[in-house]
Image (cartoon, rainbow, N blue to C red; front, side):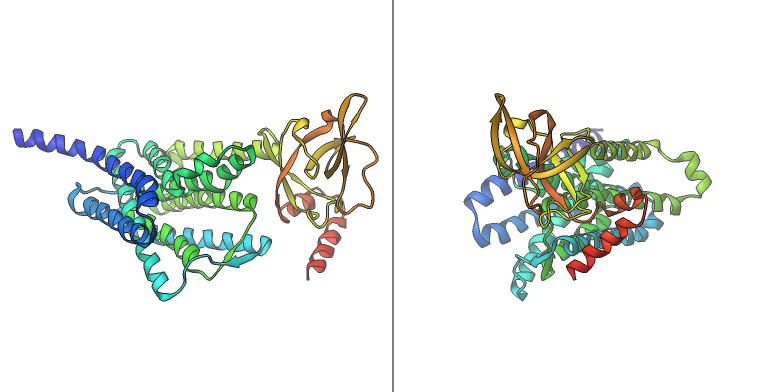
Length: 404
């Protein structure tokens, strides 16, 4: 009886023990290794050793787990995980086609590759086995909650804690959310869902495929932060939806799927769709807008999408590109001067591609916001759909010919 009670208490202690170890690793990585044990030994010896120890503890000494997915579909999930990583790579390469490529910053010598394989491999294996254990052991009765909470918790490892101290300006906060936090949460949601269904290995395959491209490919895409934010956030969510749908299709017939499918996934998908619609409609303080004229060439091309941040008119400075209302249209031009007329601050604007400044000054109540990012060419589908004739195709052809 005493042995049974001791065993139960020990089993209850494992989740707290694993969580505590992960927190200690996070604190050590951010405040000890980086600060006191820097250089090769701290980064490439101590850190991998700690993650390797965690992996061994979870695999060898923690109670076993049984993933929620069917055993016969484990191989299928591994293939889906690989395809998700490949899709992320293809999407990333597409951003390079739009915004350009750059040389990899990582050491691609044989020694450098081997060092980084150990560095990344121990981290991914340790983290993903911990993820799979927490989700399938602690949250086996409420897996949806487990996927969400574990994803948010482990997303902390996607960026250093020191970056939070630099988030002072609104633009830096928006860039951090778009390029770091939201992509981290999206990647973790996909990895957690794979770990829920298939255990650690599908999540390892997904993460490993993407990291192998990011760390060992000699030429990498160099997208603007807005493009990176959109692709890095939405591609994992698209993959999550595809994995879920294909897994359910493999698991049961369409009739059973319709009758028994858990509505929580549809609810999450619906919420994401609503947020996207609200973003495009300008409900939030940051929103997109399609450019239909060439007045801001070469900075902004026809068909580009600008990301506009709503700001008070008094915060606009000379040199900023702003969007403002002019009669019944929205115009994006650069502020070239600021004057005072009739005891109020007015803005003198001009398109970079125009010969002269705009005729009328921009009044404070006309200012919509400041342009903080540009996504090349993605506005063309919207322009084609709205075009009443074929003129938009002519403009597109002229732009393509001009780039060749």
